Length: 198
Image 1 (cartoon, rainbow, N blue to C red):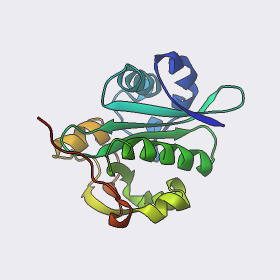
Image 2 (cartoon, helix red, strand yellow):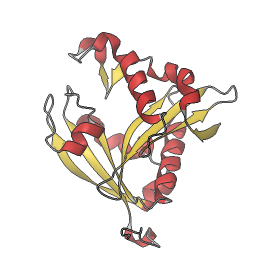
Image 3 (cartoon, rainbow, N blue to C red):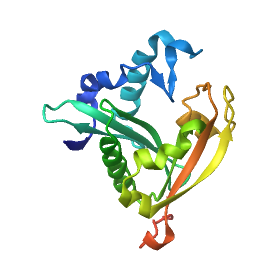
Protein backbone atom coordinates (compact mmCIF):
# COMPACT_ATOMS: atom_id res chain seq x y z
CA UNK A 1 0.00 0.00 0.00
CA UNK A 2 1.06 3.56 -0.71
CA UNK A 3 -0.36 6.90 0.45
CA UNK A 4 -0.46 9.85 -1.95
CA UNK A 5 -1.92 13.35 -2.00
CA UNK A 6 -5.05 13.36 -4.13
CA UNK A 7 -5.96 15.69 -6.99
CA UNK A 8 -8.55 15.99 -9.79
CA UNK A 9 -7.15 12.91 -11.59
CA UNK A 10 -8.52 10.70 -8.78
CA UNK A 11 -12.21 11.67 -9.05
CA UNK A 12 -13.45 8.41 -10.60
CA UNK A 13 -11.24 6.24 -8.41
CA UNK A 14 -12.91 7.71 -5.32
CA UNK A 15 -16.46 6.68 -6.27
CA UNK A 16 -16.45 3.29 -4.46
CA UNK A 17 -15.61 5.02 -1.17
CA UNK A 18 -18.88 6.96 -1.33
CA UNK A 19 -21.08 3.98 -2.19
CA UNK A 20 -22.38 3.28 1.27
CA UNK A 21 -25.46 4.08 3.29
CA UNK A 22 -23.60 4.97 6.47
CA UNK A 23 -23.05 8.51 7.73
CA UNK A 24 -21.76 9.16 11.26
CA UNK A 25 -22.80 5.64 12.28
CA UNK A 26 -26.33 5.92 10.89
CA UNK A 27 -28.07 4.26 7.97
CA UNK A 28 -28.99 7.23 5.77
CA UNK A 29 -31.92 5.37 4.20
CA UNK A 30 -33.65 5.01 7.58
CA UNK A 31 -33.11 8.51 8.92
CA UNK A 32 -34.40 11.88 7.83
CA UNK A 33 -31.31 13.10 5.98
CA UNK A 34 -31.68 15.94 3.50
CA UNK A 35 -31.65 14.50 -0.06
CA UNK A 36 -30.95 11.03 1.34
CA UNK A 37 -31.76 9.38 -1.98
CA UNK A 38 -28.81 11.16 -3.59
CA UNK A 39 -26.42 11.38 -0.65
CA UNK A 40 -23.69 9.21 -2.19
CA UNK A 41 -23.60 11.31 -5.34
CA UNK A 42 -23.80 14.61 -3.47
CA UNK A 43 -21.04 13.74 -0.99
CA UNK A 44 -18.76 12.48 -3.74
CA UNK A 45 -19.33 15.64 -5.80
CA UNK A 46 -18.85 17.89 -2.78
CA UNK A 47 -15.68 16.05 -1.78
CA UNK A 48 -14.17 16.33 -5.26
CA UNK A 49 -15.14 19.98 -5.69
CA UNK A 50 -13.69 20.88 -2.31
CA UNK A 51 -10.60 18.73 -1.88
CA UNK A 52 -9.46 17.96 -5.43
CA UNK A 53 -9.62 21.41 -7.02
CA UNK A 54 -6.38 23.00 -5.80
CA UNK A 55 -8.01 25.09 -3.07
CA UNK A 56 -5.27 26.37 -0.77
CA UNK A 57 -6.72 25.23 2.56
CA UNK A 58 -8.33 21.89 1.60
CA UNK A 59 -6.26 18.70 1.31
CA UNK A 60 -6.86 14.98 0.85
CA UNK A 61 -4.68 11.87 0.90
CA UNK A 62 -5.55 8.40 -0.31
CA UNK A 63 -4.32 4.88 0.33
CA UNK A 64 -3.73 2.91 -2.87
CA UNK A 65 -3.58 -0.88 -3.09
CA UNK A 66 -1.32 -2.91 -5.40
CA UNK A 67 -3.84 -2.47 -8.26
CA UNK A 68 -3.86 1.33 -7.88
CA UNK A 69 -7.36 1.31 -6.34
CA UNK A 70 -8.06 3.88 -3.63
CA UNK A 71 -9.07 1.93 -0.54
CA UNK A 72 -8.97 4.73 2.03
CA UNK A 73 -9.14 8.51 2.13
CA UNK A 74 -8.63 11.31 4.64
CA UNK A 75 -9.32 15.01 4.18
CA UNK A 76 -8.79 18.21 6.12
CA UNK A 77 -9.44 21.92 6.14
CA UNK A 78 -6.64 24.18 7.39
CA UNK A 79 -8.10 27.06 9.37
CA UNK A 80 -7.38 30.66 8.42
CA UNK A 81 -8.30 31.78 11.94
CA UNK A 82 -5.83 29.75 14.01
CA UNK A 83 -2.91 27.33 13.50
CA UNK A 84 -5.22 24.33 13.55
CA UNK A 85 -6.79 21.94 11.08
CA UNK A 86 -10.13 20.16 10.91
CA UNK A 87 -10.34 16.45 10.14
CA UNK A 88 -13.36 16.42 7.87
CA UNK A 89 -13.41 12.98 6.24
CA UNK A 90 -11.97 9.56 6.85
CA UNK A 91 -13.21 6.59 4.86
CA UNK A 92 -12.01 3.08 4.18
CA UNK A 93 -13.30 0.29 1.94
CA UNK A 94 -11.80 -2.45 4.06
CA UNK A 95 -12.59 -2.81 7.71
CA UNK A 96 -8.91 -2.24 8.41
CA UNK A 97 -7.83 0.04 11.24
CA UNK A 98 -4.24 0.08 9.96
CA UNK A 99 -5.36 1.97 6.83
CA UNK A 100 -7.11 4.59 8.95
CA UNK A 101 -4.13 4.95 11.31
CA UNK A 102 -1.64 5.36 8.48
CA UNK A 103 -3.83 7.98 6.82
CA UNK A 104 -4.19 9.91 10.08
CA UNK A 105 -0.43 9.76 10.73
CA UNK A 106 0.18 11.09 7.20
CA UNK A 107 -2.26 13.97 7.67
CA UNK A 108 -0.82 14.84 11.09
CA UNK A 109 2.72 14.89 9.68
CA UNK A 110 1.60 17.02 6.72
CA UNK A 111 0.03 19.58 9.06
CA UNK A 112 2.84 19.55 11.62
CA UNK A 113 5.27 20.49 8.85
CA UNK A 114 3.15 23.59 8.34
CA UNK A 115 3.08 24.52 12.02
CA UNK A 116 -0.43 23.19 12.72
CA UNK A 117 -0.17 21.31 16.00
CA UNK A 118 -3.82 20.72 16.89
CA UNK A 119 -6.91 19.52 15.08
CA UNK A 120 -10.65 19.22 15.51
CA UNK A 121 -12.86 16.26 14.66
CA UNK A 122 -16.55 15.44 14.98
CA UNK A 123 -17.68 12.06 16.29
CA UNK A 124 -20.87 10.39 17.39
CA UNK A 125 -21.10 10.63 21.18
CA UNK A 126 -21.88 6.92 21.47
CA UNK A 127 -18.62 6.01 19.67
CA UNK A 128 -16.32 8.64 21.18
CA UNK A 129 -14.58 6.20 23.55
CA UNK A 130 -13.50 4.07 20.58
CA UNK A 131 -11.93 6.93 18.62
CA UNK A 132 -8.34 6.74 19.82
CA UNK A 133 -8.29 2.94 19.71
CA UNK A 134 -9.75 2.90 16.20
CA UNK A 135 -7.93 5.78 14.50
CA UNK A 136 -4.72 6.55 16.42
CA UNK A 137 -1.46 4.64 16.02
CA UNK A 138 0.57 4.01 19.18
CA UNK A 139 3.00 6.72 18.00
CA UNK A 140 0.21 9.29 17.68
CA UNK A 141 -1.45 8.28 20.96
CA UNK A 142 1.83 8.93 22.75
CA UNK A 143 2.39 12.34 21.16
CA UNK A 144 -1.17 13.72 21.10
CA UNK A 145 -3.55 14.41 23.95
CA UNK A 146 -7.14 15.63 23.63
CA UNK A 147 -10.10 17.28 25.24
CA UNK A 148 -13.74 17.20 24.25
CA UNK A 149 -14.72 20.74 23.33
CA UNK A 150 -18.52 20.46 23.28
CA UNK A 151 -21.55 18.23 22.96
CA UNK A 152 -24.12 19.03 20.29
CA UNK A 153 -27.49 17.35 20.88
CA UNK A 154 -29.10 15.40 18.05
CA UNK A 155 -30.86 17.42 15.32
CA UNK A 156 -29.35 20.63 16.67
CA UNK A 157 -27.39 23.27 14.79
CA UNK A 158 -24.00 24.04 16.28
CA UNK A 159 -23.93 27.80 16.71
CA UNK A 160 -20.14 28.10 16.33
CA UNK A 161 -19.72 28.86 12.66
CA UNK A 162 -16.43 27.05 11.91
CA UNK A 163 -17.70 23.81 13.43
CA UNK A 164 -21.09 24.12 11.73
CA UNK A 165 -19.64 24.91 8.28
CA UNK A 166 -16.60 22.63 8.30
CA UNK A 167 -17.31 19.66 10.57
CA UNK A 168 -21.09 19.38 10.27
CA UNK A 169 -21.28 20.38 6.59
CA UNK A 170 -24.40 22.28 7.67
CA UNK A 171 -26.25 18.98 8.28
CA UNK A 172 -28.41 18.31 11.35
CA UNK A 173 -27.27 14.91 12.59
CA UNK A 174 -29.63 12.31 14.09
CA UNK A 175 -27.51 11.64 17.18
CA UNK A 176 -25.57 13.51 19.84
CA UNK A 177 -22.11 14.46 18.59
CA UNK A 178 -18.88 15.65 20.19
CA UNK A 179 -16.33 18.10 18.84
CA UNK A 180 -12.92 16.89 19.99
CA UNK A 181 -9.66 18.85 19.97
CA UNK A 182 -6.47 16.77 19.71
CA UNK A 183 -3.20 18.57 20.29
CA UNK A 184 0.52 17.86 20.23
CA UNK A 185 1.79 17.59 23.81
CA UNK A 186 4.07 20.38 24.99
CA UNK A 187 7.11 18.10 25.39
CA UNK A 188 6.98 17.27 21.66
CA UNK A 189 6.78 20.91 20.51
CA UNK A 190 10.40 21.51 19.63
CA UNK A 191 9.65 24.71 17.70
CA UNK A 192 6.68 27.01 17.66
CA UNK A 193 5.04 28.00 14.36
CA UNK A 194 5.69 31.47 13.02
CA UNK A 195 2.53 33.49 13.60
CA UNK A 196 3.52 36.92 12.40
CA UNK A 197 4.72 38.76 9.33
CA UNK A 198 5.12 42.15 7.76
